[in-house]
Length: 605
Image (cartoon, rainbow, N blue to C red; front, side):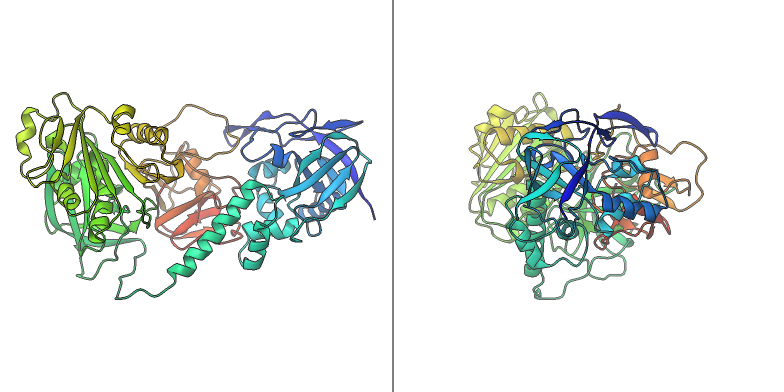
């Protein structure tokens, strides 16, 4: 039976009210009569609201089948569907997802098309039908629909025959490709075949390359390690304060060991601890601090800057004593030193030196032959964190470069410079050997493009940045300008991560707050990065809905447990899922878009 084009559907983006926000979307498509010209990027009269996920050359035309219409009408018990209901441009008779393959080509009217990928899972199709779970169902029922690339522009119209002109390589159907990305139990052979299909869109190719690389890393990482190793722990565990050191007038280092005397798992260089501080507030506030200690040390060390209005930092500086006990979650974080042989550039400002200090300890312990650049900005010598410790570690490396920037006026020679003594950068401009023959360059002012360009940084280096957000933004721009690859520049951010909310129109930023309406009486939900604790109320469909109501920055796309964009580290607690995710998240993480709390939760959000 010859496949047939039943309807051509178009629609321009419009603003739609949704859950108290405004979504700019082109998912509302309606049938048109007569001929329509299909161009390289679109059908005349059609548009997309979110070009990150829809539209463009690889996704010029969306196809959905009338057979799937019948399936969903039966599933939902509905009879009100009309052409374009699923946001598709072409409603077709034939071309089922389990038979059409990526790379297949079809002629429709005057135009020729190539299949590039399945439909992207997206909450907006659920909006369109009033069925929020639909994005997950499209995947689990193997009925996603697919996108076409326009090979030859031309006119099409309802009633045109659909003629196959070429079979794609690999023989992987749209349903196969969709399941490979979104469902568990992936077949390595299918993954290799998918990567060999030239027509597969670049975004999906990159996702599969990442999956292949992760699988390879897991195989390598599965080898047994020599010697015993303590395992990370779930939730919070009591750790005892065994040392307190005032590194500078504003920074206190806190050394922590297991309260029961047991071994602590080794942290990766650059990771952080999350502390729940009883006594600093009710409920006990939760804060995260980078580890500044050497990986593998018997004690953890975090270094905390006292902030004038910081509830927790003021308590830690004033209230901690040796012997105090803190509730601590296991080390975590992805800002870690990447193994390799190439040069390393460690860049920090102020207390941002903490995670890169741990990295420097790791490099020194390994007696690395990698060239290492240490670049640190401080207001003055009295606020120069880890001055002597870093200098001593750099002294023992075969190729180390130390550059210190004092940003305050007379910062290098100010009245408070006598508070720092011993080895390390000396006051004033230019080079100093710190009294031990190791050269350190001391600069006045902030590290800008001109001064950093003059340091001779290798363009093949991996760079690690930590400090205030404006500092990291400026340094990333500087490093890319002088030739470092953007994907080799790593940053640490303790505030809320940048939101991913596809389709939502922009609005002024609002600080996280309690949700409107009656306070909840359920489990306590703590958003650690946002410094907010909220009682759960069943009026919220999910933890994501609660976060949205509190203006906590969130990341999501499907909102039904498919895409894993909302995956969030779970520091403590347990959740239930509704609907169940198609693939569970890794241990210690949660899909907040379909999760509700069983008990109190602490989320790294």
